[in-house]
Image (tube, rainbow, N blue to C red; front, side):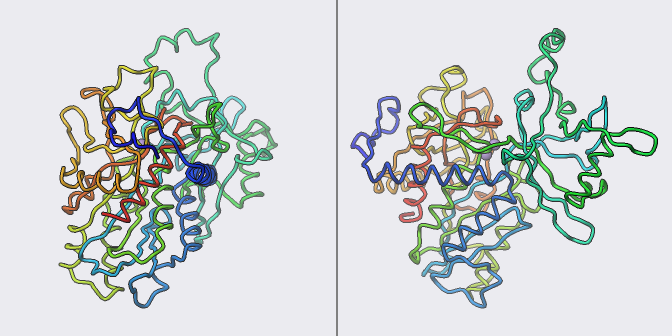
Length: 464
Ligand code: MN
Ligand code: MN
């Protein structure tokens, strides 16, 4: 890292010069990240892979411990969709934890519970999209199907179709340009309606009594290949996501193009920083990867649930440190990097941003002191004293970082999980990686930002 890093607000003039060692570490992290987001496209898949990597780094499930001691590495999972990892420190847990938090759910098209129908000689799946999407971006792309079907007897059938080149893909159709005169007059929010995001899944008819039926053919395939009956969709969670692997982006390979980088880019880097911090810490470290952020953090697996509080109580109990007051103190005394992606400056849409207060791709880890919009509404505003301490830790570790806002003051905004943790009275700030084309089927990030953000998380765990 060069000396120029100190002046973090002069973004366009800052250049990062890496040593050979840094360059190798950056490429290694990028490759691991590309694998992670290519292989794990749902929160369930992300939790599964997180457990695999955590166990390889010495973590064990909480129910495997009779008693927790400093140096123990433990994880606990909520409904296969949300996970918390703890590296138990030498200090009493009521002194507070250092928490890295991010979300692992991503925008996609979910199947409805009665999805299958036939029309015009096609079998189709009806969907309800998940998260905030520009619906017109999701037509005519190859899509893969990921998820689970749970049979009445409790058997789980895992579905993952369309990622290998040998497997078929699915798609949403769009009207040909030649007949689109009326469609092209519509507003972008209406040009593709939510009910038009149905998935093409078949065209071969089979004999069904004295009729021909494409739907019957699909049902037969589902039964023969997966042991799925039509009514099993009632207890299924199936999603359509962009098919295919994440790729390096640009002639200089400086960036990554991939699905669902919001927010698995912060999840992966938080996880790696957590797993790399192998020594027994003074304050207990925690990495929290949660579901349902994109739809408001509701439900048992979202950040608004008591999952984390309950998990902490269990951990403190297993460590022989539980009391109602001790749990409250632990939460109050914690510090957190609540990580989510930030919007990166896009020169094609320059007027959406304040150039002095926007994140630039390739200029390092991003901090949003506050989020919210139109008068900071809905924001968790980080305390200046905490921000100052954090700046010091980042500078100590030569982390390249920038402070930004999502966009122009009166234009809009977005929420994260920060305010839900802030309600415990802990110090928390929004941080993470800048993304181009956020919530599009294929989002873009910078390898430098990914590397610097991981370094930032490590600095936080080491110093804060
Ligand atoms: Mn997000
Ligand atoms: Mn999002």
